[in-house]
Image (cartoon, rainbow over all chains, first blue to last red):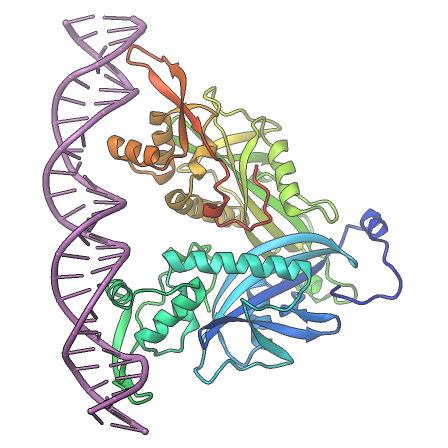
Length: 234
Length: 234
DNA sequence: TCAAAAGTGTTTGACTTACACCCATGA
DNA sequence: TCATGGGTGTAAGTCAAACACTTTTGA
């Protein structure tokens, strides 16, 4: 499905070829998330054969984290704020053996609406178009992991612009979790967590009281993320 | 360090060779944990050049989970109870480009002391011998993840034999966490969690009151594990 | 009868939840 | 002055932590 071919490919023959050390194709795929307008969005790219996750081969000996960042940057005008390895799959498709190393990236939304580049487009996670089976697996697991991580980390912050209102922050949580939260309890918790700093600025938007803008203190709560000690962030 | 060589290897030249699609070596490594005698143990194998994590190349198009299981079984007489992908690294060593896909495996202790096979031996995690840098990274991260997972999953059960006393279960937790727990609170929590079934059997060991033996109900709390939906377990 | 581990409850403080109204602003 | 989202407190219930003694057994 991912690739149109004229001549059917003999997978068994390809897998049976022991004449050389087997050389799988390597593919790094990135699920780029952002939140906008109450929806959790991810990037898909247009390709012959359909929509795909942003992907690419790593250069020789290039660390996967670097490759993933390169792919993320090539696929959006936004800058990824958080990058985390997801899973590595070894699979057989119509072109033979392929290794897929998958990543999650979180992007700050700009408030101007998400910006796409290079023929890529944003899709709400609750209304995704058809994608290849491996892409589907990767996306499904990315969602599981992202939702779970909200509970015990501060990842949601990476979906927001540098300053934001508490209502925007709450909206990001609700978007990812898919259910509403109590305003007072949410504010109490997030303030008590001590990771926010109130700025002097305010946002005036519409005919109502302006909202205080906050930013993060201490983006370096690496401990909580359960990522490896050597992993670079952003 | 992992490999002795006579002729120095020109890494840059190897990385610069674009004449063919680059073909990294693939290596699946498994950190095999078990708990015995109040210590958390892992398996290392004897190799020319020193001790190493159990490892091996995947067969062409073999899923990594299957390869990891094969490697785990080749390295211990015990049967792994839980297997989870840890991280995938792309690195340059003295032999060129290598991709390391790492796994954690948890083994039931038998009470008879852990059984080793194939020139492998058990080492307490708080007294590990020198290993290669990649092995060290993998082991460090495996410990971080294992300890963290204790908090929100029931993984510790997989380190125990099919039936066990509550004191043994508590000991496994204390071993992994590295600090003591309150007996009454531990029992209350673990019973309240509803994942244990008391058997009729008892264990009489020493001149004191015999302990009730328990076993697990519902090992299938896949949800809590934050592993991918497609991952097979054990 | 002694040593050694098994087993058992209660109290206290902390945290979580549910819930409703006034405030500041621009139109 | 009205519509709109921003901002605030309290009471009830649930959960986690600290803490010590009695029971059963074999030697």
